Length: 196
Image (cartoon, rainbow, N blue to C red):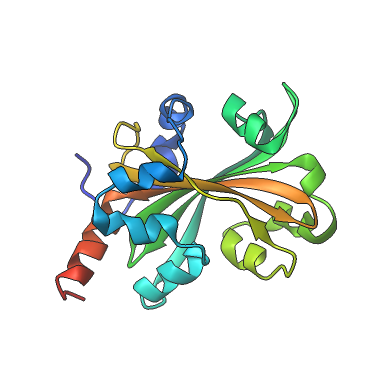
């Protein structure tokens, strides 16, 4: 197991997990009842995850950009976004760090047609949080969640559970998946135990 406290570039090993990521089994909301109670509130919360993580970390929060490129989404992502086979999209993968540790691995799939109008600036987000850009949009709509057991995901940091949902702004869709990592679990356990 990795030493989660040592300084490093957490994104170095990310390409190794793409095959296992595409194999994740995303299922509907009823599956939330099979998840341990400690996770349910975090997995089902509709508010901005960025805002929640900033609060949990007392502002010690940052985004590490792992990958942003124009590429083909996975088949299930194309289905969620109603994209044709071989249709390209912007793929953005980041780590969300809290208290100096990697808490969440996030993957966003943005159809090229969405990168116009009110969301044109998503091309240039860099290390700025996606949540802040999305939740500032008055026309924002969000689908129900799908959930996945991510404990078999091949990644340098052990993963636990993930959620994903489709956002729509001015009838332009994008798909966001968020996978919670071991250091995040340690933090929420400490919080539940009264440790800051």
